Length: 76
View 1 (cartoon, rainbow, N blue to C red):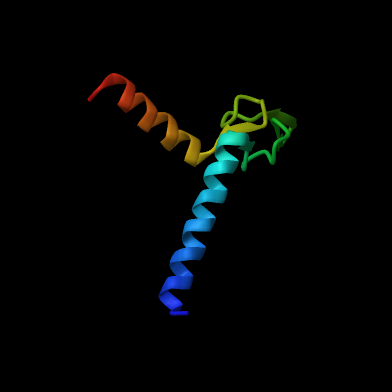
View 2: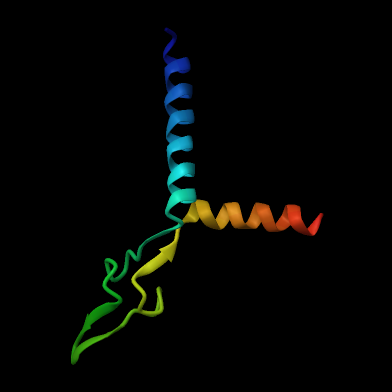
């Protein structure tokens, strides 16, 4: 097989796997607090502002999916 074809197939498979992961589990762990909701601080710990202390963040692919779906719904 041609190497470019293998790269294209691998890219398509990777994209489909990520899309299915975004559909099945739209939230991922927060990168700043590692999903704990709290961050070590000088005087103990404080709540993570990035995830509002939930430890979860909406995945980038899910952000894109929500945007496209909203755009389609609005009819723009």
